[in-house]
Length: 174
Image (cartoon, rainbow, N blue to C red; front, side, top):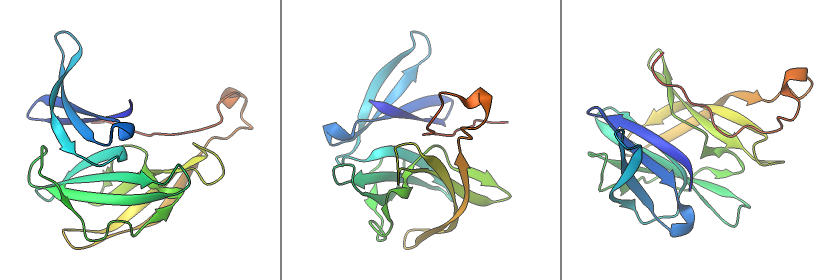
């Protein structure tokens, strides 16, 4: 289990850990009292990697990557009226393929009503950099994005010695 995606709704925190090897995406409620996870339900029976959920324009958008033996990734997108589904497959699924800019790398970032999607760049090595994509269209029929900027580890800085990869970027609130 990795990439535990957190989603807060109605003052409750839900966790969606990546479990692609199980072939499904499951939802858990985080219990603060005993710091445990309580199973809620299986959301999708698809082996998505790094699933990331966005609530946008009254819909829940689920992004994740399918892969072929870690050789190539394909962006898949699903949408629902509820956080718990059912999720419908987006007609653009599989339109983006490759090792850069496909696999999610954290929460969406919204600035001045523009959405940005952090993604992993694994072209040369796993965790090579993060590509931030600017979302140019998102609705039930269309999805498009374009590369906006790249975040890399500056290995020449003394303080970065031993740090050679970057996987995820997240923020919450301010």
